Length: 499
Ligand SMILES: *[C@@H]1O[C@H](CO)[C@@H](O)[C@H](O)[C@H]1NC(C)=O
Ligand SMILES: *[C@@H]1O[C@H](CO)[C@@H](O)[C@H](O)[C@H]1NC(C)=O
Image 1 (tube, rainbow, N blue to C red):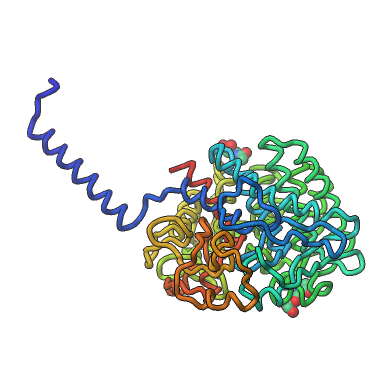
Image 2 (image 1 turned 135 degrees about the vertical axis):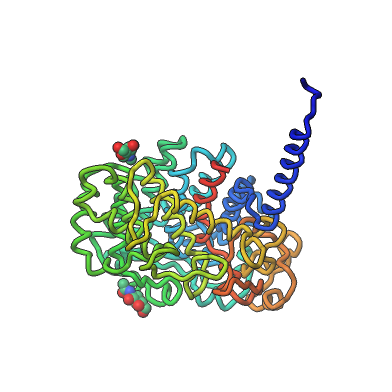
């Protein structure tokens, strides 16, 4: 029997060989076979390149060294640690906290299936910010909002290791409040506490959660925007455009998730109405400034399938978000590049990966329900949402008209001239001499690829026509940030487990 070959089986064999070849060709041209595991590990590694403070012996991006070891000292506090925001060396706590919240959310949802090494690295990435946020909130009635004078910093092209620009400390207090930055830090502490509770450090989780509720109380009791309190320190860099009301609700939603205390649930339910004038019409954004859609998706999980579904606005608001974003929705307010990438004009388009993250979270919460989202006459299923989010991730990894990956070190073709001081200047291990403020300018202007690979960094990304210049001077396209990578970690974790 074994050796009997009929013409038909011969045909079948040839057919299968042909089929395999054509699938491989299709994969090669469409790039559909992505290594999500590789991209995931790298997306976490990126955070090591952004580290401020004393680096541990386990540091893998070894071209980076200790930096900013006196942050806060002139003010009598230790504010060392935390992350540099992007291609510069300022520690902007507002977006840093948002990155931490979203990074934690991704690990809460998908951390179980990423394997022990990725999990360990992700926990370390989260702890690098939470250790810092514990320092930034250690004094009653004060929240440190930022370290580093952004104008001084942006005027120079200097490695973090030999920075000599003013490390100005900005604080919000009872008298000059900053509810957005304080509440976002509270959200980050609450979300990260859930991560450490789930993955093995219950003591640390408790410390984080206690601090989260204390910082939230401060944010809520002394209301105001840090726009007005620290002014030029934050505007026009991370000006709070959308008000602080969304961060108060967002922090409370996270505290509800972490504690299940009715206090926080009631806070959200009551203030959702009080804050309505601030919330109206904003269900089309999710990012370091606007949390409205995030609040509704996060809380949708608690009401889906329950009688609460119809007495709370969370599901209908989350549906609105879906209809504002999805390409087939008649009421969408977002644009797309011809290659299919979610696009809004402005700098750093790939920061909107956070929107994709939110769609995936919502799709997962709706799983096993019969809910179909109706955008006028177009029906959108959770399955379709997942399919869409995969298309956005695949675009970033290489399924795009430029046929390149937007993640440094992933794939064969990726950005070479990343707008990043540390990555574009020689490492102090190869060039120990001090490079002063303007001494870095020739490196900034050079057309050469960056000498140090900031592995895993995802840059601002292409223009509206899918083109990408790979030009260091064009910060909008070539600068990485923590809040581009943070949501991507969660997305990649999900797709790694299912590939
Ligand atoms: C913060 O400042 C920006 C720019 O001046 C302004 O558009 C925005 O409304 C301010 N936000 C708050 C909450 O005051
Ligand atoms: C919702 O209801 C469906 C159908 O009754 C059930 O299969 C599913 O498990 C429920 N989902 C949740 C999240 O409770």
